[in-house]
Length: 218
Image 1 (cartoon, rainbow, N blue to C red):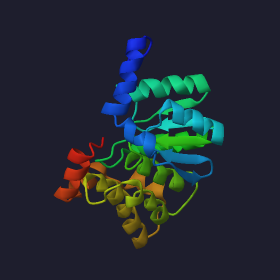
Image 2 (image 1 turned 30 degrees about the horizontal axis):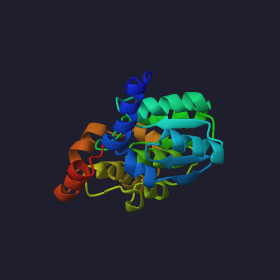
Image 3 (image 1 turned 30 degrees about the vertical axis):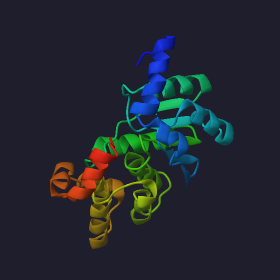
């Protein structure tokens, strides 16, 4: 979205608040501290980014929505440039297990970005939960069982909906590791079959209806 003109900027702000649900996020940002200089939240507004930089010294933002056409992205990109915050665009998905390459891309980011950092998706529930869990596993070395708590009702994540495939991804590793110990990345690299896992997962219809049709999650 072009924000180089006054009319374009107005359209971007209206799009961010009305179409992309920014009005809700202005009241509730779903913001949490993950430890080690990483935070998670919903899509931040420019004002929220300025607040986070002032209060936390924010240096990096990981946008798990990827580059997109909503006004919120154009405004976020501009705000990060003005504030000297590095913006990293990585597109994760909430209704399919992650690609092996996506897991490695997140691992590489955690190793190379400047901290303090913020990772976010749209509402801060599903993809932010996946990113947060991967951060705790890959960067902080937390057990997968503990990191799975990042996917919970507390953040607005529905395990019973199609978004529960993210829980299924980690739970499949936990079950395999209990049979005989194997490192998480080793399992991802050598045994993980994304397509097979996607086909084996089944969501409860009512929960998917709420997530897809009522909450309009990405």
